[in-house]
Image 1 (cartoon, rainbow, N blue to C red):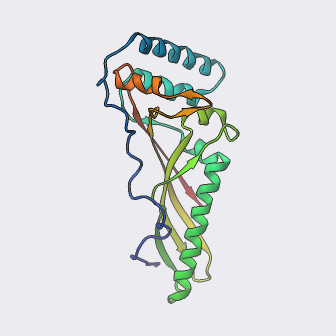
Image 2: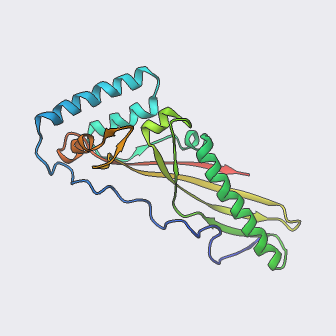
Length: 208
């Protein structure tokens, strides 16, 4: 039976204990609706339809959820996200770190078969237009956390079982912009109650 290491989890240094909090925008429905807010709302509905026609399903789905205004968690396909090169690279870097740290502890110990808990903490990764136009429009960046166990056999071979969790506070940050498009008019949809910010969640599992 494996010896279980109950010391500090592998790979935690540099990660955050908690996921990113919601934006600093005004609260939901705190501001009065202005005529131009209704124009922005109509434009967003039209844009969502265009994205759907273009096959940008993730972007269209996220914007639709914002416009529905429920504020409920929105679950995304974490396996699809994990398949993106930028996300996969970030995750693999953490898994390699786990393996290296587990082997270092194993070599310093009895070298019997052992199991080591691992936790990356929350980390973020940028999704660019080149990586995926759909996910760029849907999320732009996402926070992820890997938790799991690294098992080291008596011969030094390693096996990792992990959970890949996704989180994002989905919003338009007042005062920011992308490609010259200001986010403040879109943030006002939440602030006036015409739409609502929401958390994005998802999870996938792996073994290797």
